[in-house]
Length: 218
Ligand SMILES: C[S@@+](CC[C@H](N)C(=O)[O-])C[C@H]1O[C@@H](n2cnc3c(N)ncnc32)[C@H](O)[C@@H]1O
Image 1 (tube, rainbow, N blue to C red):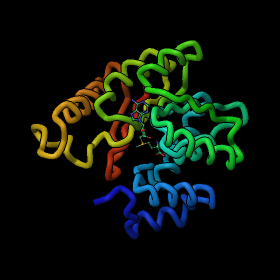
Image 2: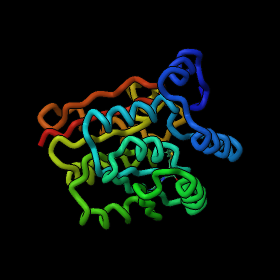
Image 3: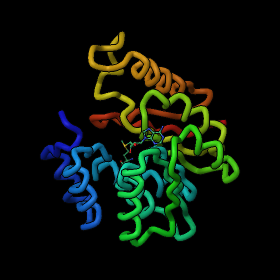
Image 4: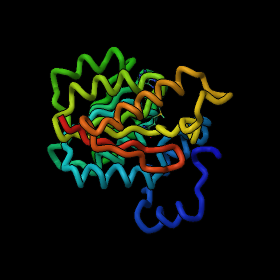
């Protein structure tokens, strides 16, 4: 099922709790026009907001901006002195997100960093510790992003990652057809690391894509 299909139940949640405003709707429309509507759903944007509020997160790193849809949901949940650093390697996506951030009321809370996350993350170490990392970029790199997050969020910090069920494929015993085995293995490893109870208090919220939520305990 494509990512952006809205079932009646999801629509019900949107209507009650997660109505995207004009700006968010225009981001979704632009992404649909470009055939890259792979952003989180409005219900997930709202879930990110609730997690930020519950946790009192102020300083966030997002890996994978796309057009800034999730960034704007998160920035809106931050207090006045909160900040989100969001990383993207695709110059077209960066340009698109920049345009939307300028139109938003929360652009002051957002810093966009352009480049491959593997190169950018080491530069962010000087701003650590962070309260939360949201991972939503190339799936094969999730274990490497977890290495960085482990070292650069505070004890009690949150690691949130999208697509960790690989649309159900991660539950197969071996890499199913249609997915590069390295991506499947990387995601299995990522999920198994977060399942270590000595290090994390974690689960996967069973959205269609799977949204991992982990509290770092060390
Ligand atoms: C699923 S989209 C992000 C969606 C966004 N978080 C949202 O929900 O609105 C993934 C993005 O990660 C970017 N990306 C993929 N690999 C990357 C990497 N190694 N470094 C930085 N960005 C990367 C892609 O260009 C794409 O824009």
